[in-house]
Image (cartoon, rainbow, N blue to C red; front, top):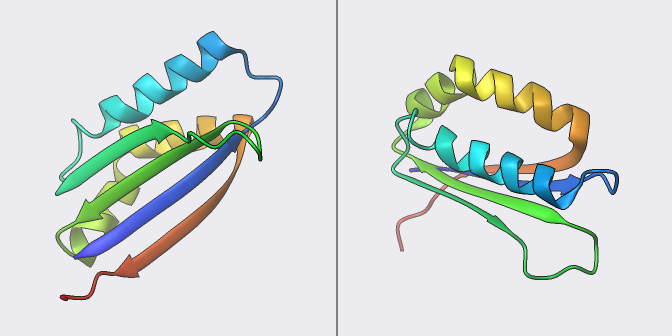
Length: 96
């Protein structure tokens, strides 16, 4: 399994309604891709500002590569680059 976790720290200038729209758009992206799991939530911890957490699992590297090239992903990624700073954690999940 390939894990893909992104933390988006949205800019302070983004209004609450705009934040809601962005979260909805990110959640909708999950219906257009072939992820094993797809979760998007706003962090409960406000100490570092408003942070959107995107937590995804893909079957393998190929599925992740297709996700990265998907037009819906590239469109939302371009938008997120304008309204947030982000940190990505990608890794291969170990079987426990």
